Amino acid sequence: MTSSLKAILRKPAVPGNTLTEQSTSRGRPYVAFGESSEKTKKRRIEELVLKYTLEELSFAVKELSKKSNSQVEFKEFKKHSLTLQETLALYLQLDLSQRKYNLLRSIINSVHSEFLPSIYKLRQFRDSLLPKDIINTVQGSEINLQQLLDYTLKSILKSILDKEYIKSETLTLTCKYGFDGSSGHSTYKQVFSSTEMTDEYLFLVAMSPLNLSDEKGYIFWNNPRSSSKFFCRPIKFIFVKENSYLVKTEVLRLQQEINDLKPIIINFQNKNYTVNFKFHFTMLDGSCINILSETNSTQTCFICGATPKQMNTKEVLKRPVKIENFNFGMSSLHSWIRSFECLLRIAYRLSFISWQVKGTEKKFQIVTN
Image (tube, rainbow, N blue to C red; front, side, top):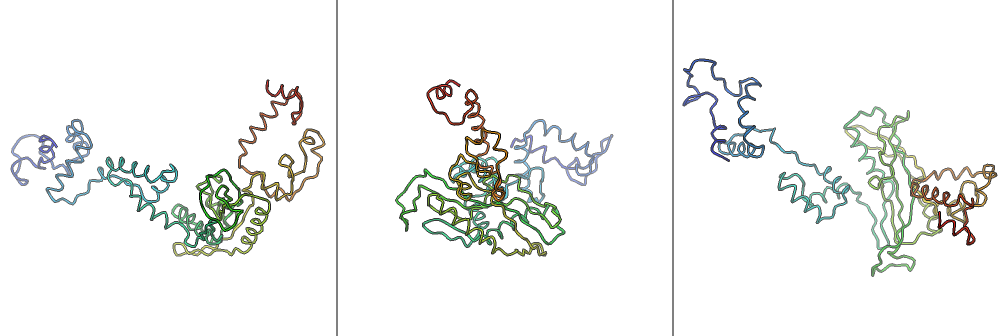
């Protein structure tokens, strides 16, 4: 801090040797800074603002406050720090590792002190948000659906009750659920109790909340990204390959668990809310839908049962449909990619108007197109 800056900041409110000394000079009398108008204050600090930076002024104020033992808070220099909830959202959104987070924290905190909390505090806060009774085994992990919904509801109510008042005490939480399998994972020397289990495959059962509404249909909370992984709530995962027996077994188990659900009564801010549940079985891909609808081929429509040859005729519109299969919905899983692939394949076959490419001539047209 330069000597000129110190002199300006230490300038007394009234000219003279003491604060009580009266000014004998002619003209407009000297007024203390705190009693001056806004225009006069700006005029007096104009030299400071033009000559010194914000960091220099902030440091000078802190040093003078320490020497004078002043308890005055300078709000204009007070820095904001992220809360644990804001930091955890940033940590998950950027998919940071521990090393990357500590590196980011060291750089930011060197400029903005205590802006990001430590990784230890962040993990403690994350663990406090997780359900306690998670069943972990060598084969996978599982949680009771009733308990998972309890934690989900508390998080939703906490986020909306600060913004609006809910008059109705009876609410309905609408969710979607389903499962999917993945393969091609790295295999390790992990011992399983069954030969069917291997860490090369993973089968996941999950649900996602869609909205929270009252009896009249008014929606208090709506999921902004219903297909985002950040709103997905895992129910169970096991290291096993997806097959028809596993899919049918999990469907029966999930339906029984949903039927056994009881309305949850949550006391929040000295008020009881009774929440019922409504589930849609729509988080499925084509292979699972074919198994549950007993459709043998992936190219066959599970709604009307039309084959690729029958789809290319006008009679396909007259085929009877299986209304019960409408409950599966139109899954958004892979829909953008599959739709664009379908358009491309149709465009490649416009010259001979046939889905199946057989014969040398048709294959040559596909390549040239």
